[in-house]
Length: 163
Image (tube, rainbow, N blue to C red):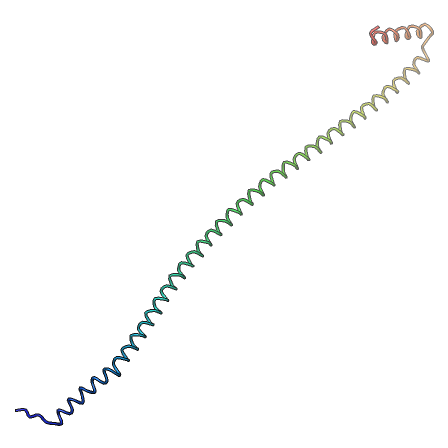
């Protein structure tokens, strides 16, 4: 059967003692260090995940602000275009008024010039007719004709004054 050998017993006791010593002084501290490192890795992963979420939130916020800036810029551009169009219409209306005023002044000046030329021509025609009449009358006018013309002139002048 089996006989127990003293060497075998020492070997088994040595192995058991070695096992308990290794377990107490080697396996537990190594397991603790591994657990601490695992905890650090987990904490770092959690921190990285948190940072990633914060970065994504900041990115979304920045994109929203950028969209708002684009919308604001478009609204300002539209407002400036409307203001420019209004000012353009005002300037065109003012220019049209000035052009109309200049045209009216030119027409008035042309009409005044025409009236002046007509009066001048009428005065020249009257003077020429008077001169011709005087020459004709000097040749053919007698004292009786002179008296008759004077009477006609006085009658016309009296009728013109209402007498």
